[in-house]
Image 1 (tube, rainbow, N blue to C red):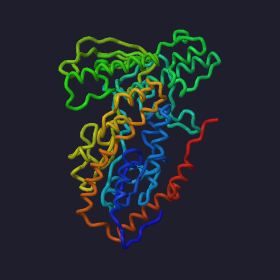
Image 2: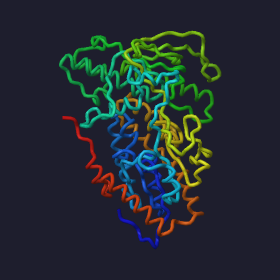
Image 3: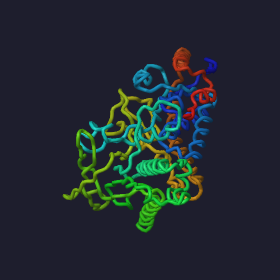
Length: 455
């Protein structure tokens, strides 16, 4: 790492998380002469783009990889991989003792929101699965790595959710169970081709229809109505005519997705109790709901649904960090626009760690509207092979701009670190880089840790 002259030492800002939001804020600050140190918990700085965005989004993933790499390679940006806040460096030590002018949380939302059933987590690995590790496993399935967790792609699964992520889970299940059935017939089907063309077209190429496979298919259970699904967003201030159009669009998108991937949907159903036999989840009891004034109302009606497993896909939230107060599922921010916390005057936050959402669409939506064509492309429902979804990667800058400007304003009123503090920070950064084997060349490092395909 090449350090600037200590006679011109600038402000030094720590950014926690190197993916979409972290790379963007790092680039903006470095462009204003701020020295930025980006701490990333993984070997690669691609976050939910790599682990949470299903691997059939090849074009969008590659575009984001290039964008993030370019921003983290700018002069004045130092990258520190394999370093997790709270695990490798205590948060309070980094925020208070290292001497950083500011610390920016951009570490996203990696923890699954708990299934709202008392005692449910005792059955994780016993028929209960959470979305984030499930999608991570799917994304790295064809790489020559030892997965942290392994999963089976089971037919007749129960998916609890209703957002884009739950549709991703359903698509994974339907495509992988379809591939398994085709493999039994000596037919190999590629995931990417299957996702672009859809299950009906691939089956038709082999003279088959879905019923020939003997699959029941998975079912998404959602506590609201189909038209309430958080797919297309109703613009702020929209009149009822516009809102009704968006709700109709949601139903249309879901119908197209079901026709292409054969998953089922059960609305107005809230999880009520797990059905457990022999210490394993074999289904779920649901409670019927009603929507009154836009709010979910529980009824006295319940029903049971048995299935091979339960996959919870009801949202992602930030992981707790020792030293930062939580308020419910999120950090106890006192300024939600730029993620400030009173206990740490030099702390700012940006991206999904503020919104408490965990997918790229939610991340981008923090700043800009998602266009209908881009959303349809993202869902794999258009004939463009996901080309139009690229617009989803163009909306982060406005939200990051607000935070970056607030940081710059705060730094403008503060003294830069002394020569000794500046040198101490760089020494600690270099020591950590050496400890994890990072030589300071991001391109070379990414080539070194690039996943290899499974033989």
